[in-house]
Image (cartoon, rainbow, N blue to C red; front, side, top):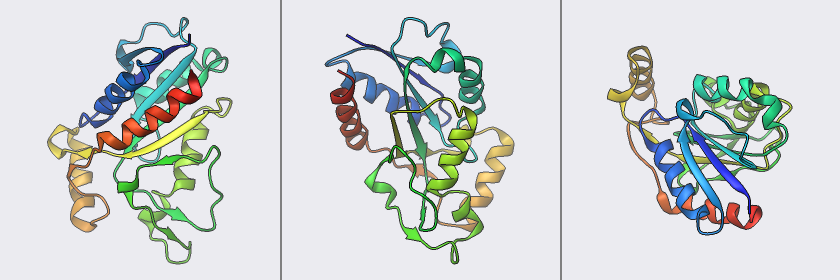
Length: 199
């Protein structure tokens, strides 16, 4: 039986809750632990590592990014899976589809637009942009699955600089708004698919 570790970072709490949902679903068939990244002492005994992160400026949080870089040689021998909590993502038609094709939370209501009409925000919130940022963190790691879920934005939980930035964003656009958009059913559905792949 495979040993699975879910390593997550969270800001408004939704990524941590997603990790718990995934853990509980996978535990029906696998041995699974879930830990905040700061609490992980070793990954040696695990066959599968699932990283969960809020999408921060196109990629992992700095804590997850640092962890991946520190353990990249050890991670290269394990099965790796990523999931992200996000508020907005778009598909730009001229961009290649990431591989593996990500699992996309239906509530994200992803639109496909051309590069010609894409705004600056669209270009930094596109599937291709995210994929490039994720790959750049650790090019030698090839995840077997990636998922994007709509999460939660609670401005009061953010560091002051980020809070100010997000206040401006939410006032200038309706693409990212404060609120709780976590859909446990969707997260559970992806976890069920994972359990079939990993068992």
